[in-house]
Length: 511
Image (cartoon, rainbow, N blue to C red; front, side):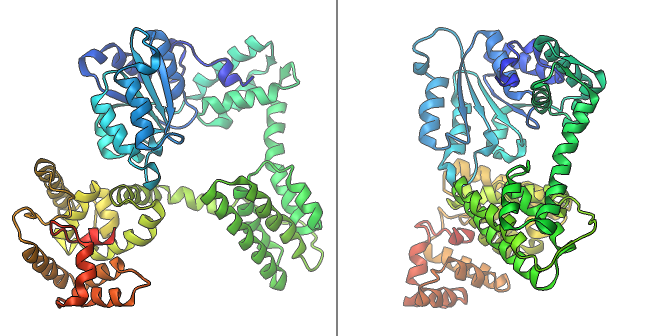
């Protein structure tokens, strides 16, 4: 049995390494009747967030309804299951007492795939008559509306001095003798991940009645050297079939293994053999892309065939000597760009939710056009409308426009966007990209104003119209171009039909 489940804390007092967060969670529960807010527990994976939620429920005698955002993303499911549990309690068969709804992976509610799930959760946490606990790894991957509707408690990485006593306790319970150095090394290897440390301890204890420091070093070395030994096998030594079979013993997923091979292969291959090997890696990457798109992991076999047998078969002459192989440079690049990618993905998420498109479409097709049209905030009105529509912070506006996050211009745009959102909420007049007086302006006047704004933005209107056009309809594209230049005529009918009845103009033409 998995030790992380076997020894899961049954009481909040047993949670290790996050005393401050533990006490804050207890206080939230004790005062829930006064504030009736949901709470978000956020922090790195494996540090005890979900365990703390269940331990609290056990302490309080609350029955638990648990959902995972990765599995239950639609609005209907959330309202039916979580809503029923948090409001009337039918799902608990009439049990007395409190019921707590625990929603794990709450930061995975984003994009078109959720079909209203994020909005449903936000609405639910505001109306729930029962406690709700949301679990998230990345707090800022949640929508601002959901974050603002909840109290938040941060769980920090568990320190080494908190992990080691847990490992000692598990060894005593399992009758395993140990060297102190061995447990110290396991704690060091897992860098704050208590769950990972417990899993490593269980793996090392398998078949042993004592764990030594050498056991830990050997286990770590075997995993690392296995990759380097395999690189020698596939690049220098083995034939196609042998390289494929040897890959079965490598403790790396195909997504990681392809990066190891790609980065180190040019150190030994050149000319034709390098070109052929890259062809095989390209094919492998296509198959990995299909896995990510379809979640059909049977495609991994085709990726593995290409990146192992294919690369080995590309070798034209024997390779000898020693080569200094190293970890994929891609990993270090990801680390350096993580903050930028998180900002980009948050913006794409907001665009996807507002426009009913996929994250990919928002990231690749819409975001670049927004950047051009709002470059350095030159079209201030459009930039304010964009920030309001997508609920953007200064760093997000700065990312899109290329302006400094802390400039007065960006700060004032965000402030104006917030006011615009508030006005829209009061008027209930639709999206933030409506004309500021859409309810008072005749459609023809709104069209004229939009045309003036487009003309003043150095061609941004033309890009806007062309993106809104249907690629397969040449006449529609021509009429969009004509409209962008300020001309009227029958050819503009298709674009007029695409606009909202209230004269809505601007970036909604893209959606």
